[in-house]
Length: 206
Ligand code: SIN
Ligand code: FE2
Image (cartoon, rainbow, N blue to C red; front, side, top):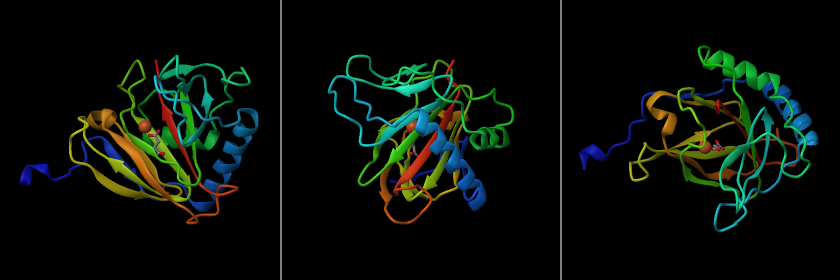
């Protein structure tokens, strides 16, 4: 069917190699400092209580979280240490300012750590009160197959290979595009200590 061909929604931008090797190392060190203060945990899905395969933590005023009883939401403190989230890594803030200069500062930086067979199912980022600011996502470490769709779950999708240093923007009509990570390709980078892939997702929440 000719109409079923994939075209990314306007507002989707993939910026390959946005961060050079030195910037990636600097950001990785800043992320490690955050994770020393705010260790990763396995959040659980609403209703089923199934743990997500991706380990998570956050930086910024608000952090994305989910558990069986409370569901998807933003919280101001680490769920286990009860401490406020550490500040957003400066290199990540520089990326935000460079790629979405007109947007107000991000309030949340979700840190996703993919190890082994971790993946993330197709979803929309829609737990924010305001969708006018873009979502900016930064990849570090192992390569991953990222899947992008449309604003309906049934719309055609396409996969893109993301490498360390790549930056992706979901703005405009693509702000609510379905997306996910099909798989991570182990051993394609040595940036992340102990291996795997780290994704930073910067968002405006309120
Ligand atoms: C996400 O959608 O939260 C993560 C996307 C990614 O890991 O690149
Ligand atoms: Fe997402």
